[in-house]
View 1 (cartoon, helix red, strand yellow):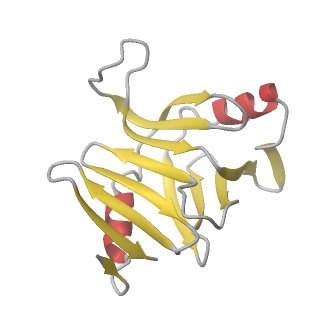
View 2 (cartoon, rainbow, N blue to C red):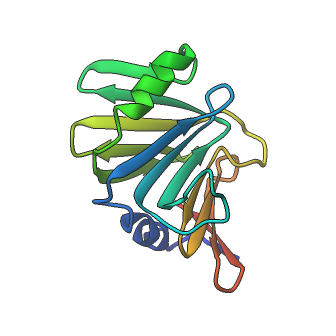
Length: 161
């Protein structure tokens, strides 16, 4: 189902992240990373306790900045990317802003840092995903929608923003 006139539902779900601290950052191969917000929760993995919310970026360009200075971006050396992500730890998410048509997403934190995500693919694939306790939110930039899946009933909603 595509709901074109109710992007407030998406913001209602994303608003649950506002005020939570960044409690975990992990970078993987290339510029793939995970940003964890909130407290650790029970998980199946002994090596990695999941957080209340997790942003998983796999195919998007990204940049971290503060004021007029760029701290790190997705094409930087590994240590620069890791240090940029680590600089977000302890800060609290204060705002989320989404721009059309490609769902560029901007996360602002209480310490003045910002994380910017930009789609790099026009294909039908997710660029980043947000995992929460009750929902999974997946970007589909080529369609200009986020897909929202409720874990309790495995239902999915696609929303234009």
